[in-house]
Amino acid sequence: MKVIVAEKCGFCHGVKNAISIAEKVLALEDDVYSLGSIIHNKDMVERLAQAGLKTVSQVEQIQSGTVLIRSHGAAPQQIAKLKEKGVNIVDATCVLVKRVQHIAEEFERDGYKVVIIGDENHPEIQAVMGCVKDAVVIADESDLHKLPEDARLGIVCQTTQSPEHFGRMLGAIGRCRFKELKVINTLCEEAIKRQQSAVQLCKQVDVMFVLGGMESANTRRLADLCKKENSETFHLQNWNGLDRKAIFGKDIAGVTAGASTPEWIIDEFVKNLEAIDSSGG
Ligand code: SF4
View 1 (cartoon, helix red, strand yellow):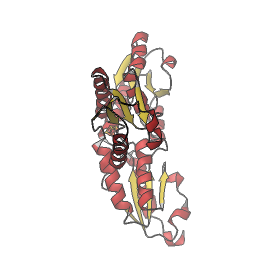
View 2 (cartoon, protein in one colour; view 1 turned 135 degrees about the horizontal axis):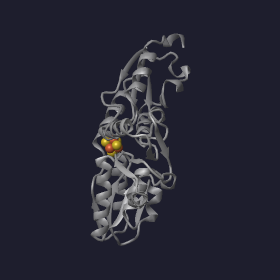
View 3 (cartoon, helix red, strand yellow; view 1 turned 60 degrees about the horizontal axis):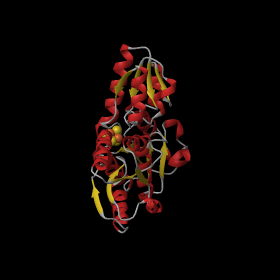
View 4 (spheres, helix red, strand yellow; view 1 turned 60 degrees about the vertical axis):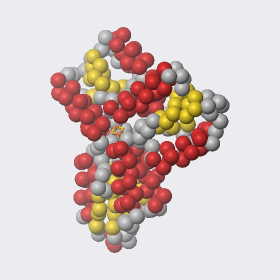
């Protein structure tokens, strides 16, 4: 089967940095924890677990050793608790995520009500919320009622949202009652390039595969965008998730991957797909 890989896909610099920090720390120390999955990819998390990384969900589960703060960041309250415990903290938060946290803090300091366009259950957003006393998170138009009326609103966006969604939400907020709007674009350029490249490719192929963790926001965003352009789009964790029916009778497959999907997952998928005679299923 002919396979075309998206020009931009796979690890971004934020994820590469977090993995490289984790590997360096694991090579030097035995008692190493990650507060939440270091990145949203089970394959990579399992590989690092084999190297000794213990992933925990609560600060209370850590009593000693070194703690890695993942690429999505952590709330200042969590960092403070870790400091109280006297554990060694290694910060692998992506600089672009840190930027969102700092902007939100500045907005609040300057008297704006912080408004975050994004998913309130995502760790990046929870960490940003932890940086300010009060914030409103709006995922889509159905959340606009949460906005206070006649307020000064300071708006940021989850790094991995699409520019289209960000623009649509700004338009919708602009139609609400407010005293002042201040917007800072906090979208990640690397995520945008992956989105553009995926959408371009999915229009040219019979079937499109988006590889990456099911819990990875940027991978899910890629899959959603591709589905809008090509209904034959499938979001898979890795090669094991492929249902051969998806490629039956198809000639050209497109492959893209989220910013947290390791290269070996993409390579294995492409190699196996290329070896298949899709006309025979
Ligand atoms: S997708 Fe962007 S914001 Fe997220 S970790 Fe990668 S570089 Fe950082």
